Image (cartoon, rainbow, N blue to C red; front, side, top):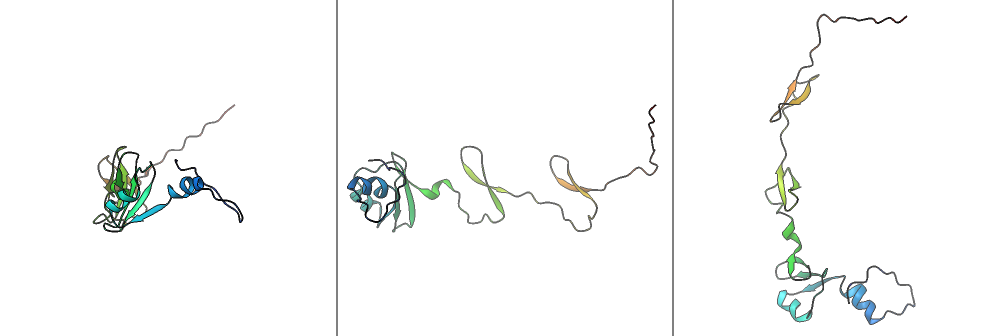
Amino acid sequence: MAGLGYKVWTAGDVVAAADINGYLGEQVIMVFADSAARSSAIGTPTEGMASYLKDTNTLELYDGSTWFSADSEIPSQSGNADKYLTTDGTALSWGEVDALPSQTGNDGKYLTTDGTAASWATITTDPTPSVFLLMGA
């Protein structure tokens, strides 16, 4: 039986075997010593099942055909400080945060780019401004 979704029981409700299998058995994280113990306990896993393997300290999910590590989709965080998680639409990866130029000594300037690098620019004003007056009839 596939997972049935979510259900709230109240005191005195009868919990049938189908409820245990559908609401609980297939929707909890089962803990096993290793994958062999899991295979022995679960003859036919169903899509969406989750298990924790003590020997590898791994959370695994069943996709309908195979068990795979839940962490396999997320790249390692080790050595990726100050990076951001990005995707190309297929796979996740860590991206470099582009460094901004120093703000020291750049009061009153604005941040600009040439399409490759960011830099600070000074706001220029016209030393001899012209005033135009439009008068209507």
